[in-house]
Image (cartoon, helix red, strand yellow):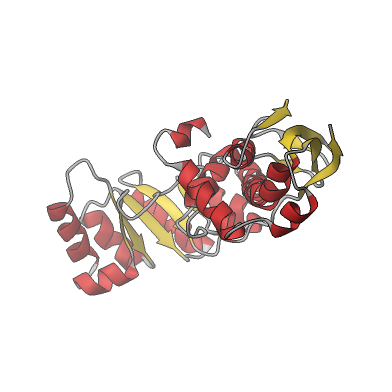
Length: 282
């Protein structure tokens, strides 16, 4: 995660997760292992999928103590059931105390990367790019959005400060599509692009008249979406949102939208299962 760690304090987030799991001590490990005991343990993949979060996995143990992790794998690699991903060596107390937190990150991130890769494959041969959303787990958005990129997807807004996206409630508060866009144009720096969500063709025309940069076609049928893209005719970028599933992706791409956003990438991805097995004292 080198690209992410330059801007986000990842260590702080991992430490919070460790503190959640170890409020005062790992009482089981401390009861069984009374002093530093060198050991080795294997990281094994239990399902086919895409690897994501290997550096976060390693860093979780490093924050607890002296540990060495040896692996030939990197994020984005395809995995098979039974693959030996790597070997941890170090104090058994560090291994056992950090095991669950480290695996939670690895399983969650790899699951997201795997689902993203599956959905991206449905878009192959089209111009449509798959985007994530802000429907992420509180506190670990940085890890989940990174996993989307590992799987071949693209990041939408990282947070509310990252870009202007005018949704239905903003439109209601402003009194209309054109009013909301004009307010955003007046308030925001000129370098900010303005995206607006529309639900029908009348709202689309208002967004085009107000010169929105990106138009989100929200919960539209395939037929309505196709007409909307034809009316836009390149005057703005288009994004499909709502009711997005793997089964609908090919039909959505054939409409010709520039982007399709899918909250399920982060809020509904199943984990990819891993285990730390075969611990041996050295």
